[in-house]
Image 1 (tube, one colour):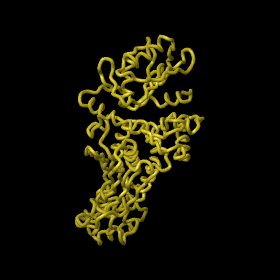
Image 2 (cartoon, one colour; image 1 turned 90 degrees about the vertical axis):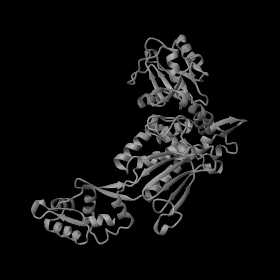
Image 3 (spheres, one colour; image 1 turned 90 degrees about the horizontal axis):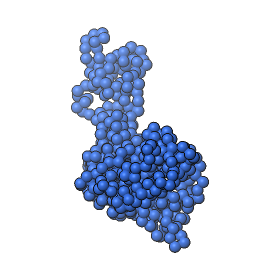
Length: 478
């Protein structure tokens, strides 16, 4: 590890992949082993010894005795033994110990029998059924590391690799002076075998020119249905309005699907105060998070299914083959974290497609509540996992975009007034003047026209007591 890489890790702070341990009073192999086990059972990680919780360097004494204690923590306090890498950077009291722990395909426990798992910044103890679920999932994780023997280095897309390098350098604040092979080997995406380099499943999916040539289950299918269920559109027509199969390396498929969702989604308007703001039917972050999670965590052993993105009039569904991994359930998905494909997750994290491991679902829910149509729904059938995002557009707004019957013949000012009422419930003549920047006479004429066509209803008799609401007949008709 270089000084720049160490600096970047410290700046990112503790999290799913990094733990700080200040060196005070010596090394406790039993205590260090707790975090080693937790990292090995999760996505792997790095323990920085001689770093305080706030990121300050306290220094580590790299004596032969302390080195032995660290190695013994992995050998004697972990069952089975966890392979680790130990290195040191810095001088004298500025030395930092760097303990790198890979994600393991085995289930590891502490010497005292506890099974621990890294969840965010905590080493969480698992019990009973959680241990059984984790043990079962461990036997499935290695698929991303399987070799694609009919693929070669020529099947990697150099442009995508260059894109990854640029984003990684941005995160590290330094240049990566690595050859293509050195980079791929370092990420574990190619394996040396019989004088040639063989790509892994993860390597082909992340950087392959045409992953579908080797892995038919790769890629994403997008379908836009008419109505709220298949076959419930105008005239109960079967089928769909648009269907596209998107192929290519994972990040390119995610970007293309987001472009299609953007093209297909409806954009509404809300009035906040007297300012009109555009509202997306589906906020960007929740959609991208659902897509990234689908490609990163799907079960790639299932060859007969692709990821599907289904758009209906009232919701967007992202369906991923395979149930939730490890001990993750619909009930604990917000607070827990576990990766079925830890190598791919790490690369996507370095690529900035994952901002911080373990917090994406929480932010997805928060933004759907604040900007979208309400809390997303998570459905695990045991064979597939689906994220359902409700549309952000209200019923009246949806009618406006689907039929635009009420909007025909209205001026832009009158449309804004209708949107204002949809969100506020009532409007006065003065508010209409401020909203549309017109005179009192023009406002009165516009409002009376809306009454005549049956959209507005006048409440009150004279003066400031008069205001306008949506007519009940209009609401029922919508």
